[in-house]
Image 1 (cartoon, rainbow, N blue to C red):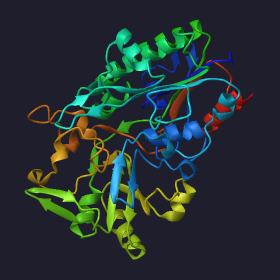
Image 2: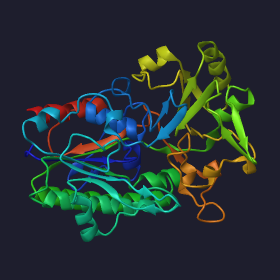
Image 3: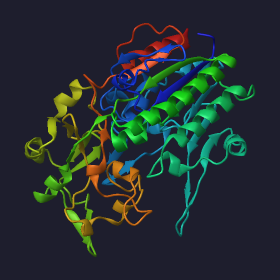
Image 4: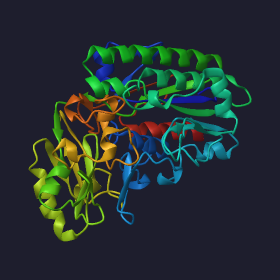
Length: 428
């Protein structure tokens, strides 16, 4: 390694997707397959990479967390303390080297020297001030002058797309080019593929267009990295597969009384204070939190019979999968190939909670890819899960990620081994 390293986490960079597109060679990089971690979702994978540890160790078991004391789900929280364990760069940084993180999840408060992450301010009477959390304090204002404002609606929602990746890639190049700022280790996240692969599926021509945009971003960053003395590692976090079936575990729980609801006007809200069981869904997996031990087996039996559910993991099965930790559910659902898990518990559209028709990633008690589509009337978002054509979360055959590096990392067969190899390189 040259002494400086750029690590790019590319959302949805699956090996099969790259191979089908004929893009296993990009500007001198040769991409190889590796297994992701389970569940293969953003926060879990990024936490696993930065610690070289399984979810059972770092505790980031999904993109959301259910706080039992609060009886509340919180998705996409950004505190670095949510990720337990030693970071792979701790010894490296302890020797006086600098570390930067751009647009990684759970980065706020992280022990790094350069930091950039979306952090909008929601106004009391509605509306939003678009902003980014940064370190040093002048970093985002400087980037805004050079690149323009980072548009949050390009990062998530019906208008999300490659423009978010364009901005992040340009910011990454700017950081590398600044001799006063450039860290010896820089981690950045490119979400470019994520949106259209979920909207349309990996085999849709619109996803191929997203791939072209990603290739342009990678080629620009590879040139910038070489000119500023950086080696490069590119890795995918998960592979998106075509989805044709939707599963509603919370409807089944509500029908049997395990999930309680509260009617407010005509709308139906989940009452997690009174519920005996609740499924926190996240793409192709769900953590099911069961209040009483006596309800675990009946809940497992109920959910195992839902069409589209391949497996219900109890505590021993979760331990075998490297997922058993206090933050996880008593049960974990795994959707079968081609299916994904949606959060709604209501049956009729008029019963939907107010937040169902809006981009509301923090209040919804489950991940909602319907937010990638407009509903009617705009700017509301769709409530039709049948529109979603791609999902992820499964690991194993057919779901390998792609990775490539400009330096020798051996032959890692999975993401944890890849991360461990990076740590060894940084420690040497």
